[in-house]
Image (tube, rainbow, N blue to C red; front, side):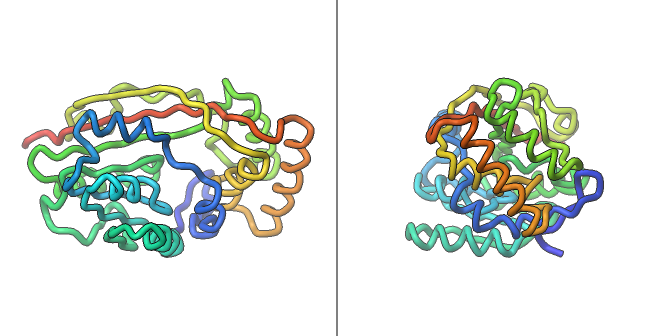
Length: 264
């Protein structure tokens, strides 16, 4: 069923359950991320871009604001509905579809760039890689990026993660060390690395918006029942009242690989 994947020791992950919090509280990458992509030739006016697993459409909307011709897909119908609503509010024209990244509805060589932010780990590499190669036009680029908090460096993120694990011990994304290989193993056969960047940024939150951000994470809203989410959120609110100021920043790492397909 669209929107549901099994991960975290077989637990069903349904991103559609998080859509309301995702729209309201989950931030996309900072403006500096898009500026770096533009400098590397991605996000240009008139460029044809496909955003895979778009969620509520952060990247898609930003590229559309920059004048690109944007398409975006997600396996969750609820996420696409939310993304379309956000785009409509801004008057942005984006071609949204409910579809898996491994089987898209587009013709060969349809795109100059394909992006996947915070999503590549969910894809079946044996299927998505040939699909990406099929979709990219000559000299097209694949951008695989990550935008994640750093629990080993940020105490607020670390304490919040510990609480997630208390409520969902199967959550496997905790304690990320911030490291991604400069050349991922999955890329070596079909892609050539064009560029890579990595930097850290403090992202601003209030207690309320950080609570919403945690509800929108895989280990909470996408996998727990509504009653379990409510219990987690109530305990998280008390934790933040004891340990965090009303406003604060959380340290995130921003990373991106830009690849060219290898010509066979």
